[in-house]
Image 1 (cartoon, rainbow, N blue to C red):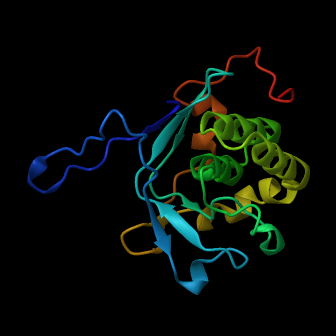
Image 2 (tube, rainbow, N blue to C red):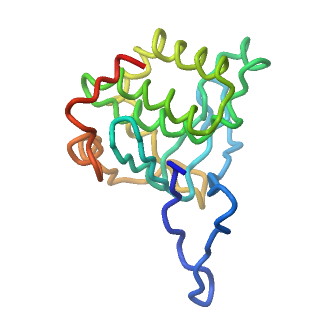
Length: 192
């Protein structure tokens, strides 16, 4: 499976939590119900356990760390009946939110392609994933461009449900050059 949950903190008594090998590793979040933590009327959640996504097409390994704040798929209210913010695509949406929060210059097409390929890996319905991909590809420019301004509001403490007190990690520390495994130089994200 291309998604790998990062090791959890030890349980009481020092025991480690292990996931059964026959089950997909879970997406573990703390859902926030405080109105001040909403994003444009959308409920948010804080990633309680980070994960790694291994992108087969480019060879990249992307780490989405614990503490990242997400609203899953940023679906406008009018379209949520057909495309709910949370569903089979949830891990791909969190990954995409993270890449948009980082907002590395000149990498939007790559972030959008990662979203499409991650939804494919998660076996999201082909029609649904194509529409979701096209939506972010065509209309996500403002969200991607707001990364630097939004960075302080992209982190939270899942135990308290509040924004993470500083110091925050630098956005640049999550740029491609600092990934566990950067993409192959011959990979072209603009051709899905």
